[in-house]
Length: 254
Image (cartoon, rainbow, N blue to C red; front, side, top):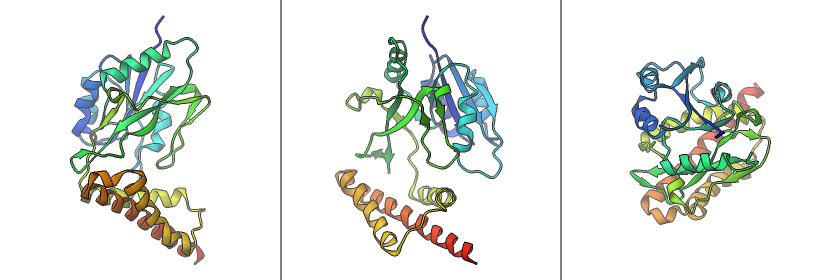
């Protein structure tokens, strides 16, 4: 008997891309939408597409990680595929996942390649790998920002050589929106890393290293001015985060 897959999605006011994403998920055995008390039409769209909808209280959080584990364990099936509300899943990727789980003795978690865009075009640094496919009973997702799931077992990367297997990330934020998101995310980073101590040397050179990493090792130079701006943004995030971390340490000393 063929094995089944539950798609799990965390949402909050995600109506912009949701219908397009759900259209790409047709053919999976179950779609679970874990909504964090949206105030737009997200829940209505999910229900109209036959999704199983569960609710996780948003409270004061602005990130999805606290709700990830709850969402995963709301799925009916053993195999879970976590998809964000701005990610398109191509047919080839869906077929690949079903083929893999029906292999004899296959239990590996899979990191999925994802194509990202920046200022209207695919970024040369793409794809990035997202660990999104696993057995739910072997997986724990920490509630901290930018955390990766902890998997009990082997992890494989889906081959990046086959571009038909790339998830497509629709979220192409404006510079203004990116800076706003940096401000929000950095607040959670400070909480997550409040135990960290960065000396003057690291505070001086860490932003520069992230700039170089994005521009050179991330091949941002191939994107011209877009790649240069992307590298600036990577450096800026570190400046914001380090400054807030230092500010927090001063408050704790008082």
